[in-house]
Image (tube, rainbow, N blue to C red; front, top):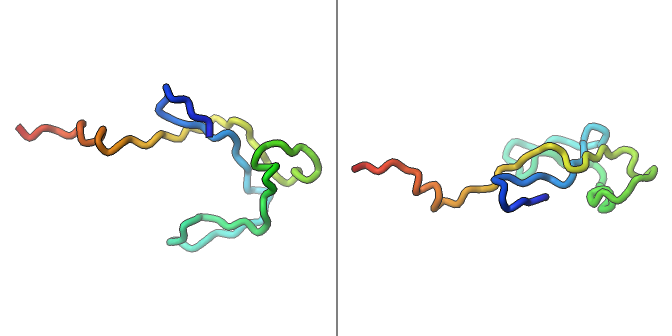
Length: 84
């Protein structure tokens, strides 16, 4: 993740597309949504492989995706309406 302290969000350093990979959907109450049929090499996850080994992997470097940082509970309490 790329974190800029002055921003209310973080961005993933890279995304790995699943469309060319074998995976299966998991049951509704599972801790994960998908399970990969084969492992993804660490080098692909780190973005350092650009040869035949990485061909089936679609890698997006620094995609335009924002993930909102969590808001502390104390901050949420201060925004409640005063009953007075």
